[in-house]
Length: 196
Image (cartoon, rainbow, N blue to C red; front, side):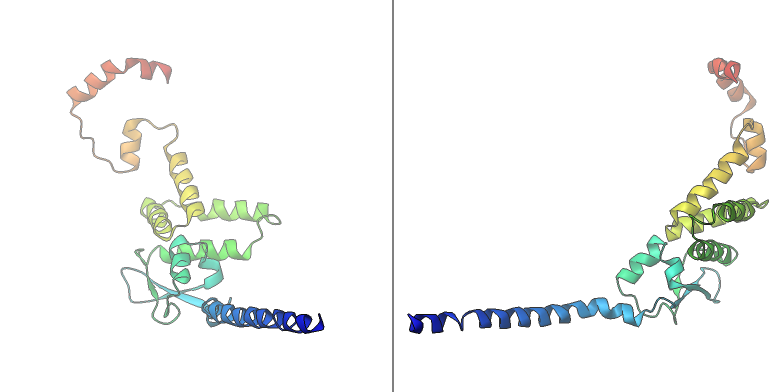
């Protein structure tokens, strides 16, 4: 019986050795995730606008809220800090978008609700529609959903309570209806004007 116990005892250690080999293999498999060491939290990413050679620095941790940049980071894109990341955003609007992501990275939303509301009000106090639409389009390109949402709310507030003529003037929209076509539309939808 003691002879049978001896062969049974050596069997478990090889299994443990296999586990150790597996663990060491899994450690080597984890190395690609070790790229995070290559990309420290304080890493600066350079964004290159579509209409300029100048690059704009932004902290990686701040811009990770961008779906576009986040997907590039997941792919392990190299050169983001030296060669720059080309973005389809005008140089006029890129610094404003960076201002948004840096502010929200540095601000705790639970502790600074008043500060955040003040920032949003100042940020969207824009008289130049081209700038407003440029920011919205740039935010959409980067996948900054919250910035797109707040920009669209600003546009909606600009439109609220305006007549079609006022909206055309506000957004420089040319009226493509003849006076006769407009009159026909008014006759067809008279009930809508009565509700207003």
